[in-house]
Image (cartoon, rainbow, N blue to C red; front, side, top):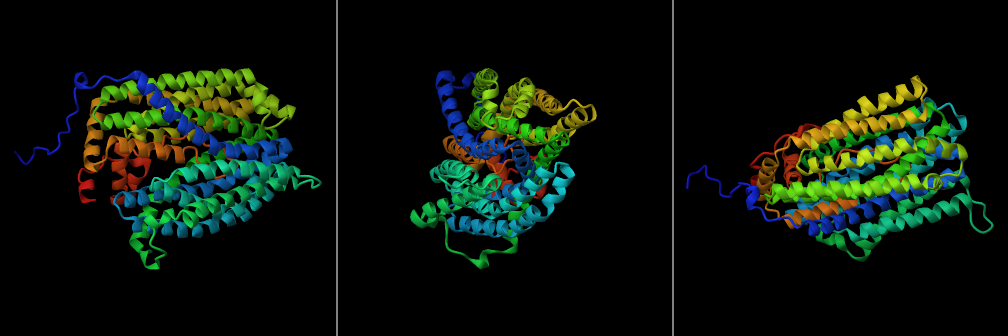
Length: 549
């Protein structure tokens, strides 16, 4: 055998050599995966809708103030929150290498870093938010309520970040059920706290507006306390990846590795949330009624996103793992099946949304002015999320192939170069009002859909299958194992929120799950420079990475 002969054949089977695809079985498998992802994502996003609904019924100024304040406070907090997701890579790879002690060390480092970074975020909530709100609106009532909301909400920062770290730590070990249960229970806690603190109980009349941020603080503290109490104090689940606090483990090399992975992710998140803040600023220029109406319709958009994201995520997982099995024909069939399922789901949602008309928006407010504004943009709103659903599916397929840089660049540039200019010039300069914001959304989604479709049409599926097979061989993973971890990640992380009123950024770039290509790139993130760690600057993973690991 010549030295150049590979030990493992990387040849992709010819289409005629592939096993036939059982479309019926694949449909039910895809639907079951989509149901699990959508349900868990919907539950998390519903936590935001609880706050929005209670504040909307309290008054227009209350909802506008909380929405505007949350939009600006989320910019720095989202950066720290997203940076904590470095634990997915670090703890996950340590656990996969059977080094539980190292996974515990990474958790310790994450807890210390987010605790330190929470201090400037708290200062931002207390001292900077007032200046930003003054710049955003001339409504004095909205300004005063927004400042009060942000300062009370600052008490939720530290527990939210601690919960994120602990949740990701257990996720890396495959412990999902306690996290799901805690997330579901927190919705009940938020509902009860909002109802009692805002409107009162028995002879107590409640606290009014102040009750909403306090309810959010209570829910934020409930999550880490309940998760730690059950998983650590009661079940002792952490002992398999914990050797106690070790100050000596806080080395410069580990700190540099954590920051080098977390930094680009945090920066990308801050850019996305800054774009969301800029769009809310445009809404603020149109008045407090538009701010509140935009918060209502954005909240509904997020809930609908959770329902059709399930098929996008499931399709991404199945396509990626069929490519990893060297079956490009089956991957294409799954992509088309996911497209049909998504279209059917969205058509049903669109019909239901149009038929229910004002009823859906009454969940957030009974104010006639706000309802009229929402109904004004309802046709544009429905058109926008129908386009977005297909765009998300195609971007998910591209992400499943490892083409994350395409989705990241297109998603970021389209927000800044298409959505925001149309919203500002249409809504403010040409006085088209609230409708211009959603015309901008529709145009952005249409451009993204066109670009992603063009890229997907030009994809060589056989070449992608070869790359995925090579990565599977190098990582020594099984298709079933990778698919299971991908589903767990999607269920745990899909639509994760900070527990405040800022909606999910519309049509975010598709996340790269634990797919064959994504798994290999994770190791490169720990070896190479920061360019590779950013989805904007992905390079082809090195062939010897896994051999050295």
